[in-house]
Image (tube, rainbow, N blue to C red; front, top):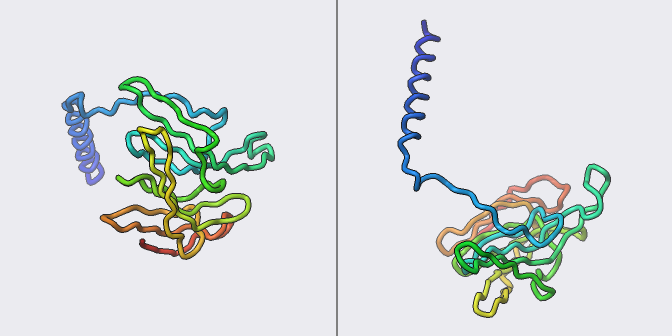
Length: 189
C-alpha cells in the first residue's frame, strides 16, 4: 500500500510538470544558433572566455595538434586571442592576428566576465603554473584588444573557481601544479 501511494503521488507530480511545461509561451524557450567556427582546425581546451563590448573573446588554451592524447600526442599551449564580433544580427566577424595574444601561452586559468572586460587569472603551461592576472578589453572602434596588468595571485594557481561580487574578485581552490592535488585556497582582490 505504501509503495502504491508513492507511485500515485509521483505520477501526479509528473503530470503537473508536463502540463505546466506545455503552457509556457514560446518566448521562454531557448533557441540555439550556430556561430562561425573559431579559425583553427582543432580548437582549444581550457581557454579564457568571456564577452566584452558585444564581442566574444577566446584567449589561450591548449590542444594536441599532431596526435590525440590517447595515441600519445603531446599537449601544446597557446597565447593566441580570437575575437568574434557581431557585424549585424546575422553576421559575425573573427579578428585574429599576431598582435592579439596573451603575454605567454596559458590554459586552465579563471575567466571572470565584467563590465570593464574579461579578467584572466592564473593558468598553466608546459613550464609551470602562474599567478598572473590580466584584464582583456575589446575596443570595438579600433578593432583592438587592450590588455591591462592586474595584481598577481599570492600563489600560482590553475583550475580554480571564482567570480566577482560587487567590486571584489574571489578565487577559490585550484592547483599549484597540474598534477598536484586541489588546494583549499581562498583569495579576494
